[in-house]
Length: 255
Image (cartoon, rainbow, N blue to C red; front, side, top):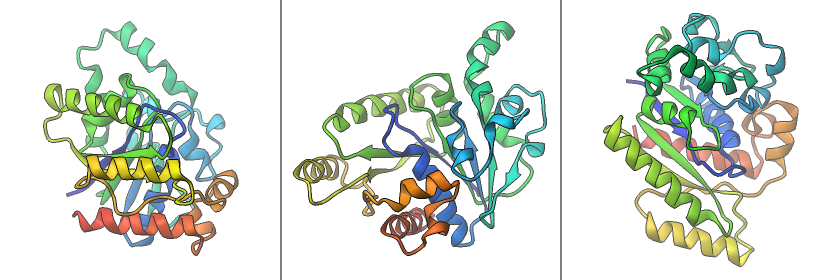
């Protein structure tokens, strides 16, 4: 049975898209068939895999609004066994589209779309936008699990409280089977006291749900994003790559 995992945190800049790209690539490296769903109107997951999303006429928006068969929109990438359902700014119009259509099930759009995918992927990874709006709710309703990236910074705990509240509401109202796969410490630098303190707080509060792996600050990660390639394939021996390989192993261990 395929696992559908949302990468979610309403706070921006915590490494959601970077994690979605590199976790997907690392899982593919270990032989898993992976689909990355870009459900953020910024389209950065596609850019991070070398796709010019601004030139795309049809994207995930056309799939969830039932204008185009989702299977026709899935694109292969330069990473073997990794495909992507791309996005661009068209997705930002989903709210107004639903208002004009008067949809009675606006939170089930992505779930219904993913159910139409014919290829038997092992993993579907959903890159969520930095908000708690319609797109994020759709992603969490469609998922079995959620990974929450937590940047080791001063406001991390406030952001955690907000996303936990959102997840609980989704579990109560729409998706009782949704579970937290884990909290992932990102941009972690053990040489700084603040990073160490935040990491200790998260591990203390959520010790059973925090990944052993943490993602370090590593220059290879932003460099690979600028090249439109996962760090796991661009510099597989870099510290950032090794961390995402370790994260993928933890995720696979939970199978």
